[in-house]
Image (cartoon, rainbow, N blue to C red):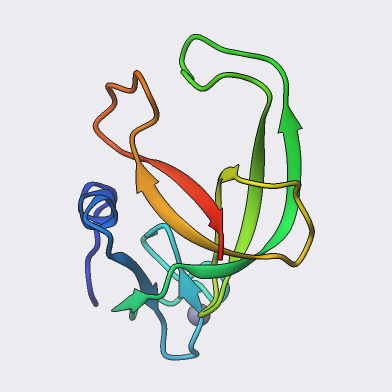
Length: 124
Ligand SMILES: [Zn+2]
């Protein structure tokens, strides 16, 4: 069983390396969890992911919160990664479209002071 802490996940992500966990059935779990998101197997191996995916769902956010420094409106998207698994993040760029190809990037937002970077998607 391979361990991947959430801190290690975000440290590697900040460095441009997206890692996930893969079970013997081939399901990819990302961000890391104790067991496979599909079959609950705890026999998980580290895999490096491409960061490429497609938009499954998106919504525009108009309400600003003090915990989140981005100006509104911004677009929140759920992306299905090429190798399996999903990530939620902030979509940058042109008008949103279901199925559009995107690439994930982990960066601090302007004014951020948290220890983990935020998840962004740029159109690929
Ligand atoms: Zn599985």
